[in-house]
Amino acid sequence: MDFSWHTFAIAALAAGFVGLSKGGLPAVGMLGVPVLALVMSPVRAAAVLLPIYVLSDAFGLWAYRRHFDRRNLEILLPAAIAGILIGWLTASRVSEAHVALLVGLIGVAFCLNAWRRRHHAAQPRPADLPRGIFWGTITGFTSFVSHSGGPPFQIYVLPQRLEKMTFAGTATIFFAIVNALKLLPYWQLGQLSFANLELAALASPFAIGAVFAGVWLTRRINDRWFFRVVYAALLLVSLRLVWGSRQVLTALIPASFG
Image (cartoon, rainbow, N blue to C red; front, side, top):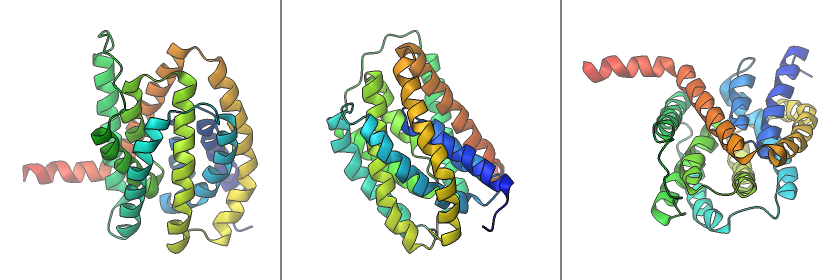
């Protein structure tokens, strides 16, 4: 064991966030990488958490096996596969900080627009192919680079106003498939080392327990408050991504006026 108990404690906390997201509280799982990155590099944090995502996905799939929207999965999954492939092919060229900044800014803008229009009774927006292909590709790409596919996915799905359990199940099943597809590229890039797998194995029980806690909470939270929590979590995570990439942002602003 080449890591400290402090590192293990942080990994267990990050695994708990992953498990809660697989239990039906989307966006919470995005806190995993930033939290684990407090004690290791973001790249290693993403590698450690990927097996935990895949394992907790199995329990989430069982919990939501009857709750999902087939149309969304049919549109989003092929696009996400394309996004994963793009992320794999550009892994050595794309800066994780730039991706995090882009995802964060999109998430913040989406939440602010939703808040601005909160008193307007907008009609549910059905799943459609053009938007689904675009946001599905972005989701696959950002999920591959930094496990930050939550905001793009929610930007596409939230306006559809799906029923609470259907929304949670669709997210769980979609990301279960996406995470499984990421295993081969991560292995090929050398990120699934023995040390990372050892830490992931030790932290996994905390993720599994959190999956069932997330399912329990999702079934009992009022629908209105459930989506308020989703929007709040999305905004907080997006702000965290922007803050973590602030050096990139400050470098871009002078350049744009130079």
